[in-house]
Image (cartoon, rainbow, N blue to C red):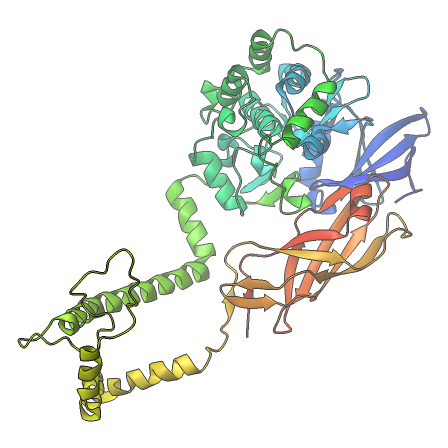
Length: 552
C-alpha cells in the first residue's frame, strides 16, 4: 500500500494494525495535510446493510469537533476497499507509556483524564458513545493535549445496532457487564471503560484477567473488583474510591455522566490541573526500588485489539455455563475420568491403610515370653544413655541378633505366601516388582494450561528491510517439562515471522518441534513491540496453546 493513492490521499507509511483493519499515514494532496487512513477489514464490509449503517454513523461522527477528540474527516471507497479518513495525531498513547513505566502516578493520570472526560462530555451531548475507551486509544501530544482516538466503532443513540445478532464489538477487557449481556451502549458503559482504563494505568494491571474470553466475560459480570489501593499502596484513597464507583456493575450506581466523573476528579485533586511529565520519571524510580507489581503482558498483540466476533449472548449464568460445557465437553469428560480414578485410588489406599497399621502394631508387640520380634531394628533401651554417651540405634544388641538368626527360611517363605491372595491377584506383587524394575512408558500429554517457553532468535535483523515479512527461526533455551514428561528438548527449532517498522515491529511465532517430532502450535507472548527493543534483544517468550495434545 505504500506509495498508492486513495482518491486524493497518498499513503506514505504503515502505522499499525488492529481488529478493525490497517492504519496508514497519508498526505491529503488537495489540502496539504497529514491524515490517518484506516482501511477496514473486508470481512466487516461484505454485507451491504452493515456497510450502509457504518457510512451513516461515520457521517454523524464527523460532527464531533472538539480539541480532545481526533475527528473523522471522510469515508471513502476504492477498489472494493473502504477507508476512514481521520485526523493524524502525533504523540504517544497511554498504552506505550504504561509499558515503559509499568504504572502511572495519580498526579499524571488525573489531569489526563480530566481532558479525556471533557471529550466524552462533548460526544455524549450528541448522543454518541465511544465503545472502545482504553489506554491505546488515548494519545498525548507534544503540547500536552490529550486526544481521544478511534471513534470508528462508536454507537449513535437511537440508531439500529451496528452488529448482527450474537456479535460483540470492542475490547472485552474494557466492556461493561451490560454490554456483555447484549444491551445497548450508553454513557454509563463509556464511564465503565474509562474506569477500567484508570485502574490499569495506576495499578499496572487490569481489574479482570483470564486465559479465555468466556472466563473473562464471566469474571466481569460476576466477580468483585479488587480495590485499587490493595494493588498499589501509593494510590490516594480518593482516587481509588472514584475508580470503584466508575466500575460498579450496576450502571445506575456509576457516575451520572462524564461531567460528574470529571467533577469528582477535580474536586478531589484541585492541584492536579496540568500534566506533569516529570512525575513519570519519579514513578519509574520508585518502581525500580520495589514499587507495584509489573503489568501483566497480554498473550499476543491481538488480545488487546478492538474485535468484532461471534459470541453467544450470556442471558443467564445457566445458559452460559451449559454452552461452555458443550463447547469443551472433551476436556470436562477427561477431567471427570481423572477424578474418578483419583477417588478409586484414594479408596484403595484407605482400605489398605488400617490393615498395614494393624500389621505394624503386631510386629512391634512383644510375645508372652517377653522376646522382641526380630524385624525391629531399634531395640528398646533399658538404661537410657548419659549425656556423654553416643547411642548407635542401628546396631542390634546381641540378643536381637541371636533371635534374628533363629528365624528359618521356611518361615520367611510362609510369610511371603501369606501376602499373596489366591487367584489372579496372586501376581500383583510380582507385577509391582516388575514395574519398579522397568521405567514407565511415556503417555500422551494434554496441555490444559498455558505453558511459557523461552526462545532465542537465530537471525540477525540489523540489515533486514522494513515493512516486509521476514521468515525467522528460534531455538529453545531449555527443556520444557510438563506433568513430569519432557515434551520439548533444548535446542528445538521454532519458526516465525518478524515485520520491522520504523517505530513498531510485529512478531509472529507459529510452531515448534516437540520431543516426539510433532509440530505443535505456539504463539508469541508479545505480538509487537518497539523496533529498538526487538532488534537489540534476541530473547523471546512464547507459549503453547492450552488444549494441545502431544502424542508419544
